[in-house]
Length: 110
Image (cartoon, rainbow, N blue to C red; front, top):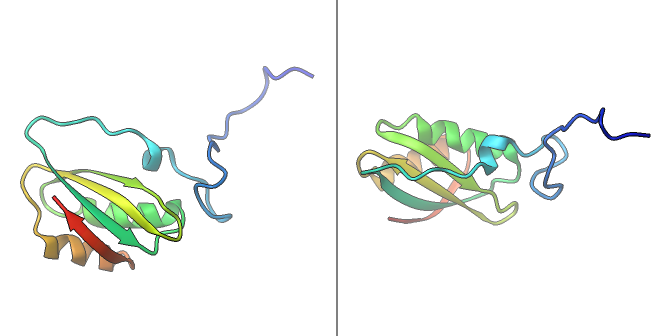
């Protein structure tokens, strides 16, 4: 049996999500620093899988000025979410977006 015909399914971290979905490459990809960007870090409670990450990322990305959202999933705990934007984003806007996605904002650090 040879391994030359194997197809990489991208399933790298068996503990990174739930049984309903595999971790997405976008959720685990390293982000590149941007010149002149403002970075805020928030912690979000309630996320358990890559679908959760996608929902939060989508809502935060919809905020005007947000250039990039990076999530480090901590299933069952507070997940770290880094938001890069061209200008500071109000905490209330971030909280509203997280709640719209169905999750709870644990804390904000800028």
